[in-house]
Length: 75
Image (cartoon, rainbow, N blue to C red; front, side, top):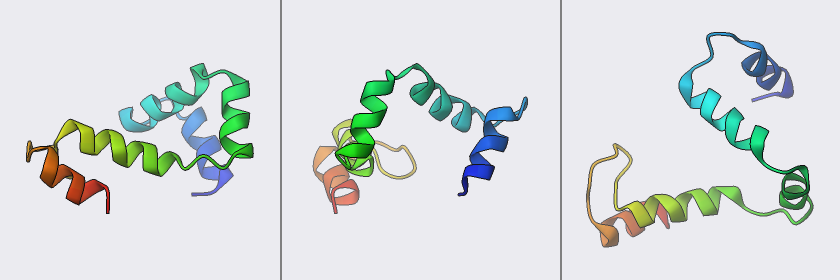
């Protein structure tokens, strides 16, 4: 995904709800936090994977239990 793709997502009036939610998360986040994420190279993917494992669901959002979810998300 290029910055141009992101620009179009931000400008699109009929953007997919997933993109709208992602955009919203970053929009409301304090600029110092965003800068810190970049400067410290915080691995957001790992935070996301950990959160998904903690929810106990698989890739299809079906309950599989915490142990199996860990195997799926924390590879």
